[in-house]
Image 1: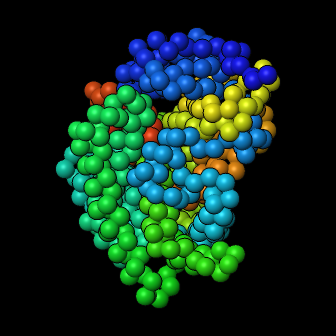
Image 2: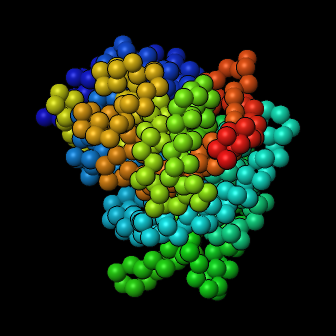
Amino acid sequence: MTPSSTLIPAVSRMRSLADSRAMASNPVQVLSQYSEEFGDTFRFYLGGIKEAIVTIDPAVIEHVLKTNAGNYRKSEIQVKRMGHFLGKGLLTTEGEAWKTQRRLIQKGFDRKQLDALSIIMQDSLAESLTDFDKQIRSGPVDIYPQLMKITFAMVARSLFGARLKDEDIELVSETICAVQEFIVKQTLQPYLNPWFEVSGELSKHEEMRKRADAVLMAYIKKRRNEPPALDLLQTLMDARYADGEGMSDELVLSESMQLLVAGHETSSNGLSWLLYLLSSRPECLEKMRQEFDEVLGDAPLSHADVPKFTYATQVIQEGLRLYPPFWMVDREAIADDRVGDTVIPAGSMVIVHVYGAHHAQKHWPNPETFDTDRFIKGSEKLRAPFTYLPFGGGPRGCIGNHYAMLQILMILSDLLRKYDFEVEPGQTIEAQPMVILRPKHGIRMTFTNAVSRVAEVV
């Protein structure tokens, strides 16, 4: 007997279709409303067409992402849509090919490599902050694009080294932004895909991708004939399979582009929301500044310092709970499955609604309140597993989570101690769930040099 999905409450196809424009505008809002009406796990039709199971139930999430992860592959969103633009790589492959690539690339994020990358990251940050300092002197700035520029330059130089040109960084960054937004449109409004093809939208984005690919491939081919460097590109080029062969230039390009995509907006979004939260919490801000001063003094922050930041880590973790960059994770069931009373037929798309899990009242008292005490050391033992997923979970959790934490701490250690800042009044601050949970209208802030505070310390 084939399992039926009738045990799961369902949003009708008609309502799903009627809500598809609202979904394209703000899927978090729609899915949260469905959760209130239909419970922690329910079915609906993406764009009125593709049936999907959505869950914020930690038991179901753990089963799908960890316990029975082998039965769940990446969905069409990643394998087909992202694969079309990004090729075969860690984000878009499955099975043994994925396991092999994951094992090889993981070496680029071990402790020794992160220690080496800390120097590249600090140099990139110093250069970026010189430009940032010029921007803020002209008045209020939207911190989202500013921080995205800072973090992407840092990620790009961690991958390709200091010789990557600013104009090439900008071209690749703009391409990734445009392609990600297009993939979201293709996914949330699938009925428009024939129009995208005949109107030239699809080919326009393909051409953008080809230009970015050409820029990065030139760097890869050049590096094949240069001395070894201490960056992630070197890790990819040095990797060897069981037969002793290395990655082709094409595969190195795919993996490089996918690492850039994965690291493109995650830290900048987390930082944007953190600065927004801290701007109205002076006591919290001062406590972080004191911790940075005590741990670092005048020294630059390195990977070895990360475990020393107890309070700053709590602040970051609470910020990522309220505004998780990856607001959802999607999978597709290979075979029929069941978790308790939840039946998941083969072929079902499963959406782990991370934002919903992070804001669930039953797991997070006063979930909309900013409270760093939630993450006091040892508190994780009091929470149900898989209620907190800022970097996903299970064997396919984010490979760069330690890099991201290092990057966020490094940037905060400089920004918080160098500047005072406040949100420009009269704005509408609203989250927009695209591939990443970004500020919809940006966040305009005024920055001033913290001269008075420096004088007090001296």
